[in-house]
Amino acid sequence: MNHHGRTTWLFALALGLACAQPAAAYPAEDRPTDGPVPMPTLGGKQFWADVLFFHQWRIQRNVLTGHHRLLDGRNLRYRSGTYESCREQLDRIRREEHLPPMRGTMVLVLHGLFRSHSSMDPLCDYLGKQGGYTVCNVEYPSTRADVAEHARTLASIVEHLDGIEEIHFVGHSLGNIVVRHYLATAAGEGPRLPDPRIRRFVMLAPPNHGSEIAAALADNELFAAVAGKPGRQLGAEWPWLEMKLAAPPCQFAIIAGGLGNETGFNPRLVGDDDGTITVAGTRLDGARDFLLVPVLHSVIMFDRRVQEQTLQFLRNGRFSTDGQ
Image 1: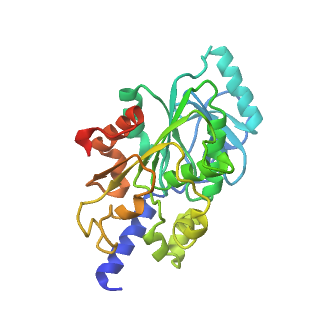
Image 2: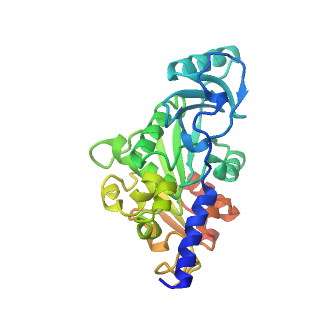
Image 3: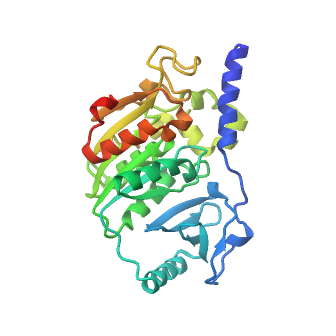
């Protein structure tokens, strides 16, 4: 590999390191307690997975310790311990604050590898304010568990969406693979929906055929340590993971990043690309619509055109004519 090639790979690895958010798995404030006084958390986002969502409240599970915590919309912790104790506290809050059941349409948004749900905040705000949707910005420890485990926690969230009438998904990068795995395993045999409320799915920069960069870095110990099991699954283990994924049995569309030429952003990748995933690698048979935007992989969800077209598809099942 020449100097330019080495620089490209090192840049990709550095980007992953920059996006990773290491923190203590068990901050002092998150040790199991029974006190009702809300307390701030100390982060550790790469160790927590949402398992239940109700309005702005969420119950999360620590991927390392297995204990749970109840957070409000400001990320203040109201309970930490068993799932049952967190659920009891949430039920008590629902009664005391007279919180109504959830209604209408829910959009479940999943971030990508190395990232946290904060990376999807602007998109979620747009969908909530402009679309009027209830939006669940799903937190999951992308590098700390495999895709199957992430899909199981997504199934838990969907299962507990009592009162919600319709469900949409929006994923970025790895988040799309988590949704596809959920759609395959939760549905069982045959191309059917695991939940009849599921309607539409927008994929942002999805690695629908794995990741060439992850495959090339398969023997790199630093990449393996940072990217964890999902990094291997998107690379060297992709053939095994792909067999467990579904072509979504709901309406879905793809938004890919690229320059519309033969080289894209990254000359080390073959064909047009967003710097991380090739345009060809995002495509999937059965998509109702496809949109190419000149935006890098890591920031595609911040692009206003992407946000607008995501909303258009969730509303109408097609991107708008002027967005194609």
